[in-house]
Structures are given as C-alpha cells and as structure tokens.
Length: 566
Ligand code: FAD
Image 1 (tube, rainbow, N blue to C red):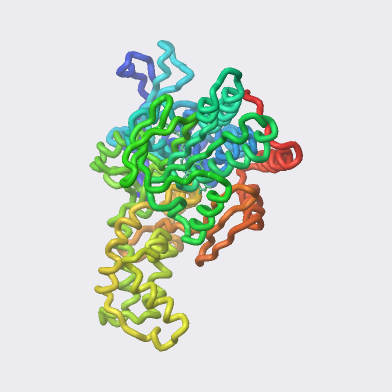
Image 2: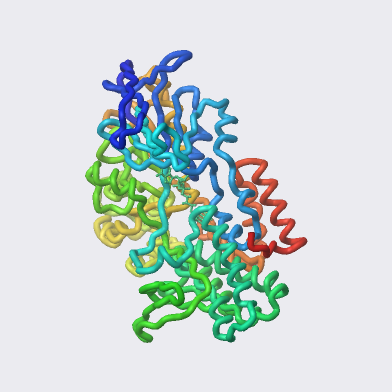
C-alpha cells in the first residue's frame, strides 16, 4: 500500500461528458485528499462491487478515515453459497440478501452508495466512468464520472460459456439472485407444461428433462437440490409425470467434483447413480438450440438430446470492464487481473483488486516458494532432508492450498509416497533430497498455483485483509518508524496477504453432504449435512438473514417446498 503525498489540491470541475450529459466530478491534480465539509480532508476511496470481497472490505473498513463511495448495480449483498437452495424454494431469495444500505447505516452513514454499473476504469487519470440503470441526470442516460485517490476493484466475474453457440440464448446461469429465481420459475413451468393435455409421452419426457452442464460444486449442488425437490415434493404434486423426470449432468472431464478429494468424488458419483441422476462424463457440449443440447464424445461422436431446461455452470469468465482495464495496464490476454501479494494491481498505482476478478501473480508466487526453500536450506547445501521437505511443503500448502491438491497428482507421486512412507519409518526422514530435483518435480506447480480458488472464502479473507491495511495506513504514515512497520530495507510495511483454507463443502442431496477440511480430513454423510447447516447459518452476514434462512429450513422440513410459479 503506497504512501501518498501529504497535501493535495482538490479541484471540483463540472464538465460535459462525452455523451453530452452534464456530469460532476472531482479531479485531484497532484493527488489524494478530497475536501470534506467537516474535519480534515480525507482520501477519496471508491469501491466497485458489493459482493463477498466488496462487502467484507466495507464491513471491516474504518470509514472515519476515508471518503468512501461504493458503486454497484445491485443495492444488496447476496449470500451465493445458498443460491442453489433458492432455485428450488428451499430458502427464499430475500432470506439470503442484505441491503447494502443496512451495512452503510451500521457504519454511521459514512459510506455513500450509488446504484450504478462501472463501465470504464481509467487508472491514468484516476477516474471511474459509471452508468446508472435507473437513469439520473438531465438527458436521462444516467452516466457520471468519479475521481478516486484509491480504488478497490471487487467486480467478481461472469459466467463462462466458452463461446459455445446457443448457450447465452437458451441456457440458465446460476450466478445472481435473478438467475436462481428464473430457474425456480422455469422448473415449475416445465412440470406444468408436461402436465398439459394432448402431449405425447415423448413430449412430456422432453419437458421434464433437466440438464446441468458442469460437474463442479455449483452444478452438482443444483442437481442434488433439484433431485430432492422432485422426489420429496413434486412427485406427490405431479403423479402423472413423476416417472418421466430425468436429470442429466454433463461434465467434460473424467469425474465430477475434481477439486475435492477422490473419496468425495467417488461417493458423489455413486450416490448420483443410486439416485438415478444420469452422469455423462467426458462429454463436451458443442451447441445448444431451443429444443436440444448437442454434445460429443470420442466413442459416441456427436449427438443431441431434447431438454426442458438447461443450467449452464462451467466456471467463470471475465467482465468486459475488467478486460478493458487489463489492456490499459499491460495485462491483455490474461483471464483475471494480476496483483501482487498486497492486492495492488500490477501496472498501475493506487488500484487494488480482490475476489473473483483478480489473482495474485503467478511469478510472485513462484518467487515466494523459492524464498521458502532458501530459508529452509540454512546451510546452503542445496539439499534438504525429507523431514525438512515436509515442513517446506506444509508451509507452501498453508499459503497456497492449490499445491496441496497438486501433491496428489502423478507428477508428485514419488515424493508424496516417500513422505507418506516416512511417516511410519523414522529413518526415512533423514534421507537428503536435492532441492533442484524437488523443484523440478514442483515445476508444474506453476499452473496449479496461478489462481487461488474463485470462492467466497478467498474473496472475504482478501476483503478483511485489505480493510485492515487501509485502517493502518494513516497510523503508519504518522509514525513511519513505529512498531507496525517492518524496518528491513526493501520490505513492505504490511505482511502480504496469506489465504487460510478453512475447508469446503459439497451438499449432495438426501440430507447428505461431504466436507473436506484442512489437514485432509474428510467427512461424508448425514452428520456432515448438519455441520453444513450450522456453518452456513453462522456465516450469514446479519442476524436478520440468519433468522430468515433458519426459518426457511424449518418451514421446508415441516411443510415442504412451495411449488407455485410466482
Ligand atoms: P461477487 O460476489 O460476484 O460480487 C461482484 C460484485 O460486483 C457484485 O456486487 C456485482 O453486482 C458487482 N458488479 C458487477 N459488475 C459491476 C460493474 N460493472 N460495476 C460495478 N459493480 C459491478 N464460494 C464459496 O466459498 N463457497 C460456496 O459454497 C460457494 N457457492 C457458490 C454457489 C454459487 C451458485 C455461486 C455462483 C458461487 C459460489 N461460490 C462459493 C463462489 C463465490 O460466490 C464467489 O467466489 C464470490 O462471490 C466472489 O466474490 P466477489 O466479491 O469477487 O464477486
């Protein structure tokens, strides 16, 4: 976090925007501090996005130090891990959203929220260009510009279609609250359509064929939710079509839930098989028309299946505003914006990026790993004992949990086996290994460490970390040699961001879930589902949403899910 000049002059300009509308913006020429009506001038901090990263940042920020403006096209925070539950009415949409203005109010109203979308970030002139979808200024185009001293970019990501023809037009996505509500309506419409008179059995079957593309956690959770909804509620309400319902999951890889431990993948695949969910692994979707989904596989070639509804859940892509920013800061061609370990965007100043739209630069991570080896090799011998290697790996895995997953792949098998064996054989622990050999085996790690997982966990931890840094900047500036500052030359005054992996869940339906906890702890079954309930209840952002979510779960247990097409 860079230190800005102590004084700056603020010039407030009124200018006519490029589209002709009257816009007002503040332009700080030499830099920083915005004039404030009361008290000393404060830095102008603009935050883009009110998702996991943006909201956690705001909640932890000492807003008395900054003049904060928040821009987002939605005026609420959505608890995304419960979105699949919204698709089937297990919880209501309003139960998992918290109005941003509630959060602002709790901060003593020191944050200004503007419901608008940022369509351009200009890091050279330190301005963001925004557009309100509800229209504001005189010519009604709702465009305005904001100047910033510091910019926090937490814009998240959009669904990735891999440019597959027909996906945008014909598939549902599961990213936003509106998506989940649309899916809920669409599921009910499919059942109602299949129940209409004068339909052939084939037409009825088509209507209640639900296809999920993508075998990642979101796709699998949705398929499991839908299966529960059908078997527990809709089968009773639609006896005429219940036996025609089919749920298919299409996955391009060999297995589903590949980011989880193999035991979880195996359990999930077997459970889906028992539940009658059709798992099509090694199938690539090539196009989607309004009637059928076409896929291909090496052995079967290309073929089409008629469907009633398709949910597309194959990971995340980059928002256009981020692509534009990447071009400006010489990061064109990347999938996500690269930052350093302090979350500063590489290639420009005073811009920070976190959450799904950014990642810590791979080169930086590899340098960090090299540094860990250097520190471990105290006698500069170029060798480490198995015991030391174990410690090094523990350290790397704590910082970069993706490496932990990589350790289970075949390139690292020899080392992993040796490490495992040494657990039962103390003598093996003293065997010396060349660091170079070990690094060679680790070299493919590049591709594994390049991105932290795009999860709420990462986004929230980054939001909290960055807020803590922002809270301390003033103190560090006033007291540069103070205890918080790391005095060694060339060192940053704050510790770098370190991700702490707390584990991940995969709800599998039928009141069963799987959890992979730190230290390779695996838990699967009904008790894990209760753990899931308690964790997600405790993680709610307010007591209001916590109460709503818990009461929705209770309502579902007592009365079942609501099947109206509202
Ligand atoms: P988001 O939360 O997506 O927030 C982005 C924000 O930017 C939003 O407020 C958006 O309105 C705003 N925005 C977008 N465009 C603009 C613009 N042009 N201008 C201004 N603002 C803009 N993670 C887990 O850890 N555990 C889970 O169980 C889990 N389950 C998930 C289930 C589903 C269905 C989905 C979709 C995701 C799930 N995730 C889960 C992933 C998690 O939701 C994301 O990693 C997380 O939301 C990323 O946070 P973010 O702040 O980067 O982005």
